[in-house]
Image (cartoon, rainbow, N blue to C red; front, side, top):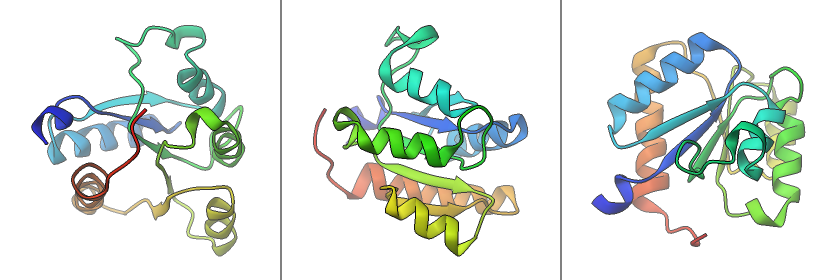
Length: 149
């Protein structure tokens, strides 16, 4: 598994710079080989996935193996972006974890209806964030087998 572990990218769609920094630090603590890429709104997320605008270069913007998606972002929110991503046959393989401050039953239900693979409420502490991201890492990168492409 070392070759795969050395090459995967997690794309994080998160508009809060403090949360971006916490997630980046926590991912680095979980596994140093994870490359975290960040976008701060749904439009940039879709551009990243579609290789448009500033994201045409695969070296600087590699395709992710996992997406952490905040629901509440400016320009285009996570719900709308989730709908667009899951409606595009080119992205059906991409695991999407909603990573939100919301714990609303309505938000949880809607996220799964739109095709989210998981829904995780952001934890209150850095230590718990590391625990959650370690569990996500173990599950998505060491346990499950995903289709290639």
